[in-house]
Amino acid sequence: MTESTVPSDALRWALDRGVGALAEKMGFTWVELNPERAVATMPVEGNTQPVGLMHGGAYVVLGESLGSMHANLLAGEGRLAVGVDINATHTRSATAGTVTGVCTPIHVGRSITVHEIVVTDDQGRRCSTVRITNMIRDLPSA
Image (cartoon, rainbow, N blue to C red; front, side, top):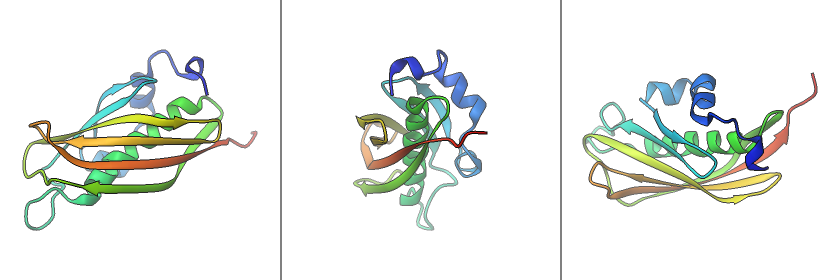
């Protein structure tokens, strides 16, 4: 994977591709996408547990959406990134406003990528750290 495989307007590429029905339903909104990182936000409202705290699974949806899309961006045309492992550590609970996920690659290889996604609340406090591993595969020939 090289930077030359990345579309010149990566954010437009992502917007055209879409993030999937689940992320859309949860209010995922792109902020930034380039070879170095991916950033998106998601509202707390509508993504909470019964007691009003941001649901841990919502943090994971944000993290997996960012990590998988960034891996697909870096994989390039004719290749597909698919998640094979994900884990999260929740250290704070957002109760209102918006959370922001910042995704950065830890490892980018020919067949595996590993990304870390730091999710923060509106005050910039870390709420969750998500790590995702994606396998990169060639798409079958048509």
